Image 1 (cartoon, one colour):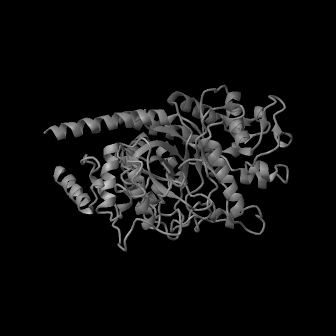
Image 2 (cartoon, rainbow, N blue to C red):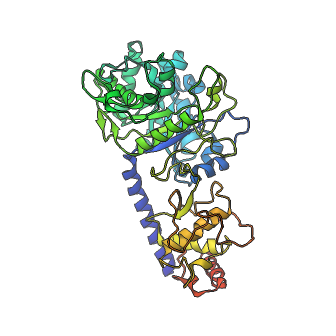
Image 3 (cartoon, rainbow, N blue to C red):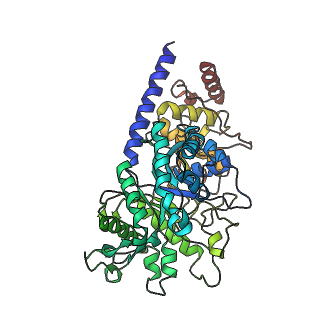
Amino acid sequence: MFWKMESLFVLTLLVLVAEVSFVAADDEAFIGVNIGTDLSDMPHPTQVVALLKAQQIWHVRLYDADRGMLVALANTGIQVMVSVPNDQLLGIGQSNSTAANWVSHNIVAHYPATNITAICVGSEVFTTIPNAAPVLVNAMKYIQSALVASNLDRQIKVSTPLSSSIILDSFPPSQAFFNRSWNPVLIPMLNFLQSTGSHLMLNIYPYYDYMQSNGVIPLDYALMKPLAPTKEAVDANTLVHYSNVFDAMVDAAYFAMNFLNFTNIPVMVTESGWPSKGDTNEPDATLDNANTYNSNLIRHVLNKTGTPNHPGIAVSTYIYELYNEDLKPGPVSEKNWGLFNANGEPIYILHLTGAGLVLANDTTNQTYCTAKEGADPKMLQAALDWACGPGKVNCSAILQGEPCYEPDNVIAHATYAFNSYYSRMGKAPGTCDFNGVAAITTTNPSHGTCLFPGSTGKINGFGNITAPSMNSTSSAPPAQNLYNLGSMSFLLLRVLICSIVFL
């Protein structure tokens, strides 16, 4: 029974660490992605989740509360924002019981297995369905009441994404204010956000600001390209310099709230992006501009610099969007905001060298699968055993005396095995996960005479075999360094031992 008690202790410790990490990470700026579904060939939810995991996307926003997606996202650790669609807003805003029923079916039924962190009540309600605006705050309050009744109000926040167009006179930011005609709804809404500790959610599209400016806004300023100080925009009231539209609009939102005496509501950007293709009258909707904007935006958010008037304050942002949506009505640009095609192929390769692991597809498309720093050694060991056993990776290069034996530790050996499997599977989505202890990186882990698969034209570490998918959930602690004994039969024996322990 000792091994069961030991396993229980380790599991409890891991849960505590995860909870602490979640709290610490909650204040960190992050990049998320919106998932639209207007595709003629929408991938299955499990394929969507595999792509998210392969690209290290840990925050997503859904435009509804689709059951299939919520089930597929369960037990992945991915943080999920769900939405009350605009066509359901009137019903929920007029009936507390309808709101309670919605929360029961779409939140309580999936939480906590699916890590739902926020509910977006409608989207751009003031500008898309203004007739529903009078019930917007009621809808938010009813949803909140249902969360309170389920004791989920601290874990799940309620807000509503707003179009940045409701902010008038947005430059200079210090003079910005909300469209006053909406104050009867905005003021109680901001009171609600403040009292519940929720974010002001804002959709910011520098592409549209640029297109509608008649040449006033320079393209480089919209694309977040580095500017010389003499080319930066200056707020004459604060003397603060702005080098891009995005920062100026975020600060404008803070000033607009301050104008209404709300000073402690943080801003979250729920949509931002750039189209990669457009009609003949949309010459700046190009692959290069889309790549430039999204790459610069991701780096800017993750650098945690904040905005010029709110330095160091996190501005977490959701990229619009994961897939190109070919069924979207309107101009060509409307169908081409995605980072990926429906088959999971990138529309363009983001310029993200040195920006961390999120969306790690470097301009050279050289990606590697490595063991995560700080991963539990026993889980790493179990995943290593799987790769060198059922995963059918040829792990001879990490045996004693071979080129990749040193450094002799589980992180280094697991990295070799993980990357070998990842390369053999064609770097397909979902093949660099290993139960959460692996991550994709653009840094080549080769060293000395130890060349990793994918770093040269030659693929090392595999025979001519077809590797299975990794479905193993075993994490029992095997005997240390048994794979160094020089015979692959020992690896199979260790997997067998792990299986017996968990029976």
